[in-house]
Image (cartoon, rainbow over all chains, first blue to last red; front, side, top):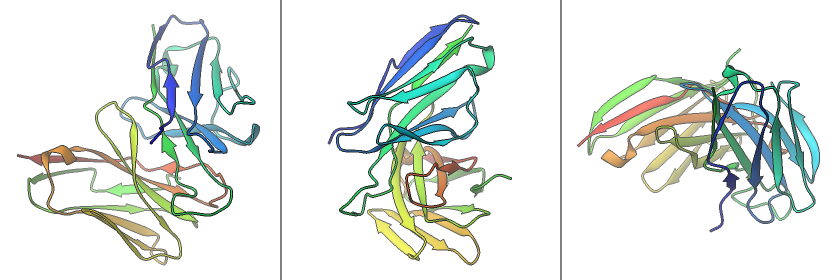
Length: 118
Length: 112
C-alpha cells in the first residue's frame, strides 16, 4: 500500500539559511500534519491542513510556514535556520471523510526528514 | 502539562517474554494511538483504540483503554528481538483531524 512520502530524507544547512521540506500524503487522505522531533524527544505538533486549508497550529516558530497545494502535497518552509532547528521532521496524513472505517483518524507517518543545521 | 506519559521509561526483557507498557493522559480523548519507532527512523502506527472501546487486539498486540483512569496499556506477547524499539502513545482529543499529543516514549529492549 502507498505510504506517506517525504523529501529530502536528509538535509544539511548552515545557520540563517532556508530549507523546504516536502510531503506527499497517502492518496485520498484529506488531512496533512507536520511534527518536529528533537533528539531524544517526543514528536511535537507544528501545523496541519484539511482540504488545503490550515486546520490547526501548534508550537510552530514564526520563521516557519507551510501550505498544502491543489494536489494535496504539502511543503514546510523554514527560514533563518537556527542550531535548535536540527531535528527529525515528520509529515503524517489521515482520512477524516466518509465512509468511516477502521482506519479513520489514524495518522500515518512518513519516514521523516532529518535536518541538521550547522 | 504533558499528555501521554508512558511508564516505564525503559524496559528490558528476554525474547519470548511479554512486554507491558503503560500510558497515562490528562484530558479527555476521542482516541489513543500507539506507535513504534526504531532508532532515528519513522513512526510506525500500531493500533488505534477509540474512547468507547476498552480492549483491542492486533496480532501479538493487545491494547486496553480505561477512560475513567485516563490510562492505556500496550501488551506485546511472545516478544522478539525485532520488537526492540521505542514505543509512544499519542492522544487525539476530538477525532476530527486534530493533532496528536505524544508522550515521552518507552524504550523496549528484547534480548535474544
